[in-house]
Image 1: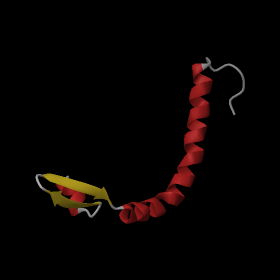
Image 2: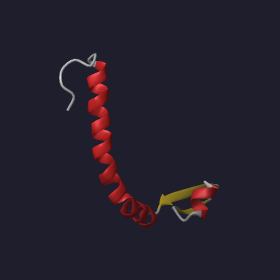
Image 3: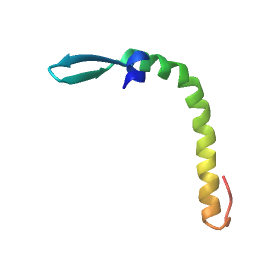
Amino acid sequence: MKIVNEAGLVDSRTDAQRRIYRVRTDPLREVDDWLRPYRARWADHLSALERHLDFMEDGGEGQWA
C-alpha cells in the first residue's frame, strides 16, 4: 500500500488500530484520458486477432474476415 499511497492513488486515515484507504479517481482519470487514443487503435487490432484465432480454432476452413 505504501507505493500506491506515495503515488497519490489513495488517501488514508487512521481509525484506532486500523488504516482506512480511499481510492483517488482523479489520477486514474488522467491515465485513462492519456490511454484513450491507444485503446481505440488497439481495439481494431485485437478484434482482428480474435477473428484470426477463431478461424484457426475452426481448422482454417472457410473464409477469414
